[in-house]
Length: 112
Image (cartoon, rainbow, N blue to C red):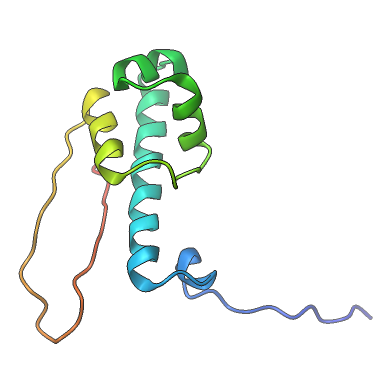
């Protein structure tokens, strides 16, 4: 008989689950989605990291580090700039104030 391994059910937000505040988790989730969009764009355009970095005005080691998930050294502004440089449209929409007395939300959605 196998021993039961203890586990904790995920909330659906890995960053919140590992202890980040709601605001930090939202920013890290948004950055992750932007990085995935950059990676998808590079793949779709069949660019090397060197070619993509040149288009983005970055060096290849920095781009590589970000594509491997090292987000602490890159801002959302820089990530959106890279997407634009790679030929993607980036749209930022500021919505209405929340109905209840709660903080707003940060959300990134990639269009098909």
